[in-house]
Length: 105
Image 1 (cartoon, rainbow, N blue to C red):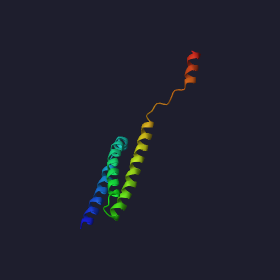
Image 2 (cartoon, one colour):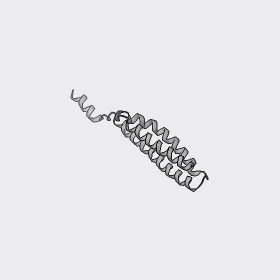
Image 3 (cartoon, rainbow, N blue to C red):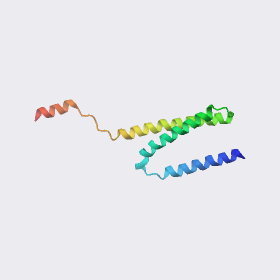
């Protein structure tokens, strides 16, 4: 009975999470990604505890899967956030062309 309840909660949480993230406008994805990276880090710590604890074979396997998923989420989130922030950086000024423009005037 406990396994059925845990699976029910897991499926319900996945469904609700999908619906919540699906309703976010694209403009808010980068700030949301930064906030969810912190939550994924907390999930990663919990997954490591589940995988490393001696709770049983099923717990170790599911914990390992959770560690892989949370790690992928954290790394991809930081890569996407870095890429999005890179779009707002100013390109470096070329010092030679700036010196030539000043000499020509």
